[in-house]
Image 1 (spheres, rainbow, N blue to C red):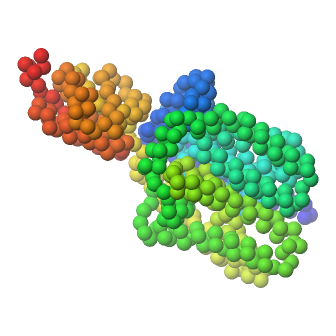
Image 2: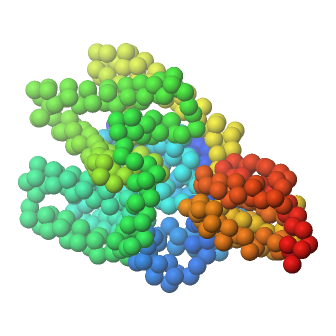
Image 3: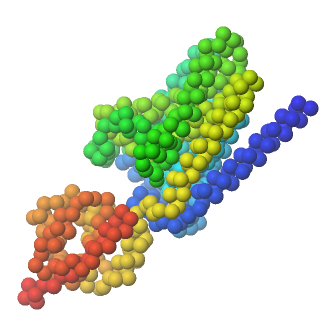
Length: 511
């Protein structure tokens, strides 16, 4: 009878998970093709269209872990629309919902697994990156699967578990260079567990060998970190972002809670209070469990303690390492830190689960009321940023900008692109034959600008100036000072400015 009840509960849990996966797919598929590709997505498509050999060769020369681009390379053979390209990320995002359920269940129980899966399902930040044609959602998913197989391998030590751990972790390292910050967490937890359990020498050797294999299989993906371009890129990040402080840590917590589409002091502190309360309740029950005289003799309490240690290390070591290193040379960028979101959701989910089970029997009704209230609050407050993602245009609107130029262009026109790198999204949508010239964002010297464009202008009657990813208006200002240049129109699209100048040189000067 007890076994039948357990089977029924397990089936009910699987049904709830299936409903969550359906909801997750619906939230991520909705409006998937509404916006055009922004710069980074267009870059993904451009890279993915190259050959496999090109990917491998380039990954050793620059910051270019190849896994996501290789996946997209084969995915593009089935279609290249915005919907289809982004659908790969949707698929990975939905699969990660199942993974966090499995991990939460392994660490604690199925209720924590279900709550963690629900929080990741409605996470505005997770939905955002599940709808973007970039590798960040892949890193988050692989980090979960790597963690699952690491736990299984340390607990049971079977060959297939070690093999699965090595393969998923190596894939993780070949997906994005920020995956290296998960290595210290995994090794610290393995050391903690093996020392606490006084593991035999064979288990230690298996762990060391697995790390060596991961390192060997990660060489291609991580080789670009030491390239010349890598140093240039780190320098740019340091210039753009600067060293993070306490406000940035709170901002990261808010982004992990409610994403980036809502603003306002009340929302900010309200969101931190609600999610922080879940985490605080979680940690207080942990402290209480450790202080209990019977806690050390209770296997369930010991397992809960190990699970919480795992989640805290999973979250705090990567984030803390990035924060500390960014004090020297900053690379504190939200999209790079996003893959560390899953342990945050597990931590919040366990906090809600502990509230629901507060006092087990003695305070059961109080716990149910408190836990239900917190779950409802988290669900309701997450609804607003999700709606904002669908209501307001978030990405650069290259589709509309190019359509505007294409509808108005003439054979005697020329297009200047500032910054020159924006040719990637521009060319993705542009099908015309008007000449395009790139101008660097760092080119501000009037003499150099005149040398760059001065000899070109007399050959054309109109100039299109496209500005994006820069605040360099030097070329626009210089065109305004020309005697024979007249600003005809200024149009703005999300993240893009399109200006049209008419050039009317006297015939003598044209010659």
